[in-house]
Length: 241
Image 1 (tube, rainbow, N blue to C red):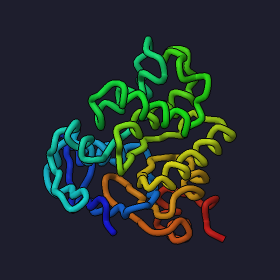
Image 2 (image 1 turned 45 degrees about the vertical axis):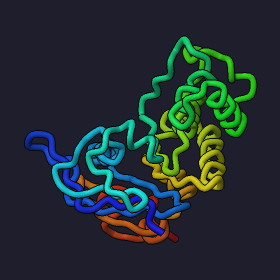
Image 3 (image 1 turned 90 degrees about the horizontal axis):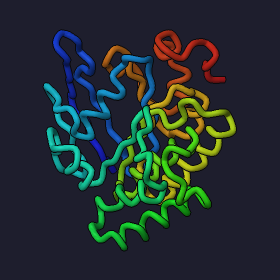
């Protein structure tokens, strides 16, 4: 069943067409990978879905409701949360308080919000880091904090913008495990990522954007077998065997 439907989305900035006539569907329970070279329109699409940009054309429908042009905080209340490429925790606040801020989106009672935050911090395995201030967290921990804060809003759909950028292979493996655990809780994910091995491992469906347009879509096997995808982005090393 479709959770999110993006129909004929076009977004321009002056003479630059960032996204052009894009269709995309995210099904309930799915982990969808959104891939493509820098400048392909991936983050712009996230900003349209999350309400930061209003599209010039097209519609965004979430759980059967047209949310095109809805403000970001209202999109979040409806159940869509996103992370950003550059992590921006509240530096002087503890990790748990950073997550509480997200939890206040679904429950305005601070005591209840803290309970939600504690559950998420425990689920994501932060342990003794819960009361460490943001400025003392490592890059991997800040990446996890971005996910925790988005998760705390009560989201049904997470838009994750390069959650594995800058991580070591071991840290990426831990992140893949984390994403699967979140998905098992019934939360759908759209993941923007440049590490194709990680994408093909964790995602059940892939959409490849090139110059703002959808070039190829399908299962990892289908995408890695498609000559257009290999030529435009993947390269021969990702030819399916």
